[in-house]
Length: 154
Image 1 (cartoon, rainbow, N blue to C red):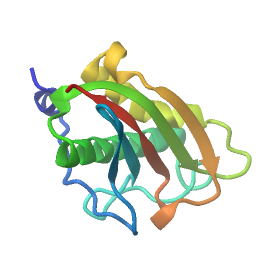
Image 2: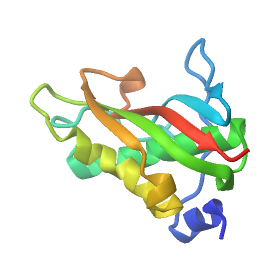
Image 3: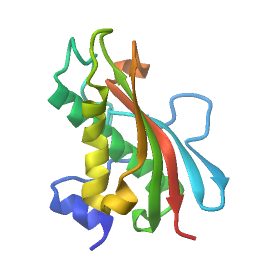
């Protein structure tokens, strides 16, 4: 079963790859079969949750935003590198969570993204090394932004 078939079975689909929001490369090769994926937010076709965790959104809503964000991340991989079935490893993801200063549950929010990766790709490929960082604000008022490094099969 392909990754996109697994997504469909879960009631999900890949959105179109989000347009760049500035002057940068969406994907940059790092070496042999390694790629840096620039930050993606939670908006799909201009729609999605907005605001900060601990003020506007619950942890569960933040996890859903993280899940939407990783779907955008996957769509960038597919559009710029190729088939998701050729992903060898999600090496590292950095999850930014827009939140109030007294919000400390960034890792739980990030689980919304990384759990989907594990569900789709399995633990060995899908579980990346990860950091979850609180931010005072993120572009466009998105509650979550994710960037990272992916390894593809040759």
